[in-house]
Figure 1 (cartoon, one colour):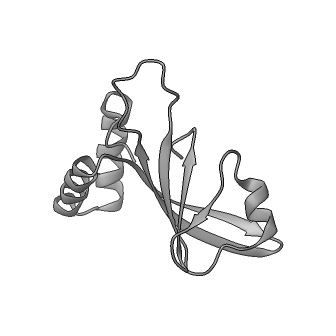
Figure 2 (cartoon, rainbow, N blue to C red):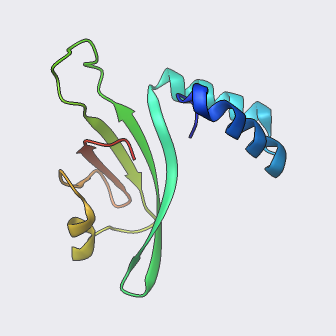
Length: 115
């Protein structure tokens, strides 16, 4: 999560690597793949629908129109779920934009925040 935030995240990342004995080779490969694909953020998030806990994984990509100073910041987000996200509460939680279903378990949306 700290790939592009090296000023404030460098110490935190080193601390987490030591504390949890992460494989630095795999982390480096992941970081290079994220940079190659211009992926800003990789995370899992959990939320409750009723009393059932649900967890999804998502990737965020920034717009490639960064050379346009007055263009609105847009983030392109891929969401991976283990099941269809068709519960009415999910639409209410999406602040801006709509979830577009790519296939049974992958969704796409455009947002104003990268996470």
